[in-house]
Image (cartoon, rainbow over all chains, first blue to last red; front, side, top):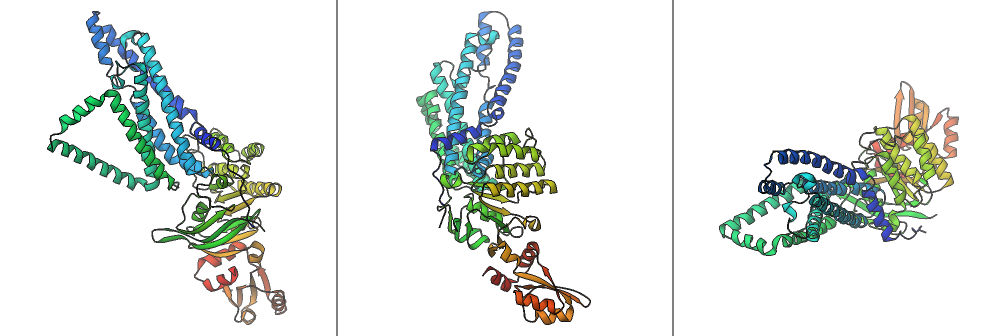
Length: 255
Length: 298
């Protein structure tokens, strides 16, 4: 005779548990990034204020300076931070969740939902801050941190929202893939992967150079445009996400 | 008798190393089983296989009547507390205790709170920073309060002091009496847990040496002490598990004595000593004495 387990909890409950698990310590996932953004903002604001004070007061100079601020990469670190969050989640939170009886599938799907949710939430915050920035005339000093050329200054807000969202998704996805690789294939697997990737990229570049195809690459990106390029990144993200799923499906938690 | 785990011809190898090698056994429901063996014997691998953390190379595993692999219904009945458990980098003790009830359907919060007090756990301590003993205690608290129908403790008390270990044994027995469940306990401190164990599995080099009730195992050997000549005469051609001697005195551990043999030994002026579980396991796993181990597991 064999004892039989009662039915599993509903899928929504299991996925919800994984999502809650990722957010169990809100410091890491919300407060720390927001505090760092605030600190960077404060420092930037002081610099803007100094430059603004030293700038001649004619409209041309002021506009020039403001345009220059739009090249600010002050917020780009947060994307890398989110990649690290994804890597850590795949490595440590994966082990932890399996120790608590989660299936790999539930963990991976729940993590994907968590990351999509975080990407959406942070994109909205980003675009809201951009709106406040524009509305206050660059925080009163013509500064620019959230209206950045990397997300399209002239695009309507909903397109910029899409750009920011796509970039968050991209970093979460490749972070998940790297983290999964590390769990399954250890450091050696990552080294091998990056070696092959580097050779592939350099080989591709060499091929483009030899065949004189660089202008065609330029034309391609000019054709797909800013939004098109971000849309294409979603394909890369989807591949990375799928790879992460397949790799982790057969992975053993590291001990 | 109801089995909660049924393992058939289970093998797990890493390259050429056979961590678990053709193992078959059953675990009966609501019993405390000791999984004993030396370092690297395959205890952790075996438990990782039963909890679907590892993938078997061959053989079959049924837990609650089904393969545990990616099986949410089965896995939510399990709790695997291992000495090397990883925690998210930013987790404090309180985060572990906050998240555990979401995953274990039988979690008892009052019991958990009581254990936290008794083990003096620092709720705000980071899992990375707290002492080894406190780290282990977190696992012990989760393992006990989860009340999982099948709970695995893999070396649960590394770094725990004697008081905390005793507390663990006491709470485990108390709670087990009130809420019967199946417990698998792997440990090196065999003497300490000897009284807890109802069943014993001994594994060495990936192979199952012993699968026997604890009482049976304890009675399966005895030490005969006395004058060398008298001892030798009594032992005769019996299976000798271990032999010690000083001068004219000898102490010989032999396999399985029945009541008549025991009486014969006493009338020959020999003293009979009990062999502890720990001594037995040490003797079973320290040499290449495969002939008598087969007899014990038969």
